[in-house]
View 1 (tube, one colour):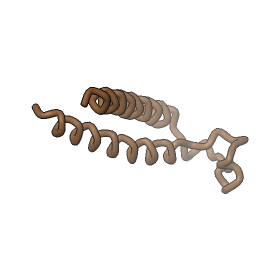
View 2 (cartoon, one colour):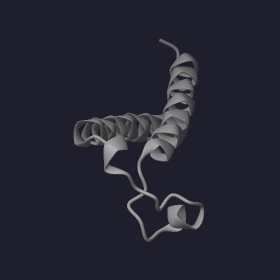
View 3 (cartoon, one colour):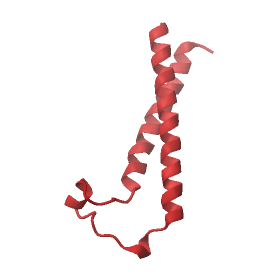
View 4 (cartoon, one colour):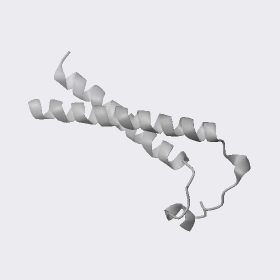
Length: 82
């Protein structure tokens, strides 16, 4: 495959992973004491949260972060070789 095509594919992966990371981080519940309290994020209810959902959201966020990091490093390596 041509390096231009690989760069394009990796760029698209980085853009999609970046958008997903923003969305996933915004979906996380505020833990309190931070900037989320300033905007009303400090109100917690035990009925609206599930530990399984939070754990799965954490895992998915870490997975997307790893994909983003690997694609970004691969893109940087390809950019320095040409």
